Length: 360
Image (tube, rainbow, N blue to C red):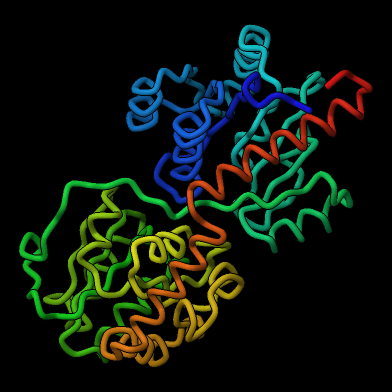
């Protein structure tokens, strides 16, 4: 049996720092440290919130930009191999495709590549093990790799830290008005335009849109064109998700493309009724009329209908909250997810040792 107290994991994180997958990699690394004391080293880009979190916890790290020049000159490969030699990790955990494409070849330790979507395996060629954020992504990985014993599901967790409280007054929102919260990048894939159009049919409802992205200015203009700008607040990037959920009546996820969407689990944790479009993640984990309300993708009338049901039917709201929190406890609590990470790491190490005929 592998002793978890002696495990050492080296993480490779190459994302932009503000997307769902990148935020979860940071949340997972912090939780693994806080909950299990796992020894970790991180190779990441130089984002202030990453560095602050690691330095507060005494987690060692290196900075790598994960760009073409570092690959071409061999700088990235040298740094990674030097750090592996010095840190002596039991395994590599690379988060998403870019980081996985930098995993050095011919390592004598296993590498686990994490998938936040239905990606090709070509960028993961030096990873021997794969993990998907949903059960269906694991199915995809089994289909593409042909190795079910080397494919795992590693959910994100919805557990949020306490934030300094915010009030509706700060956003000039009436206390009695139904308030919808969108936690999302401002991007076409996220269906923000569908929500803005649905607001036309939800008289008296207000919306907080927390997120940045390439289409932010377009959506601000769209809100004016649709005549809903007075009821919409564009907040830009926010990291106080718990505080915003605490003042919301409804959490919405109108995405056109969403392999999962951690906001699903966060709404269940925060006990806020969820309304979502039937993208892959919501369709797979949300049960309509039980722990959330679902509508078709791009269905403005359907989204408006479900938002009003969530806002006005008190019996339904209470049922959605209760059932949603039960789903959170079963699959998406920090404790359940971190236990799954620990068990997966140990399974990989046992499998790797057996393949190499090494002692456990």
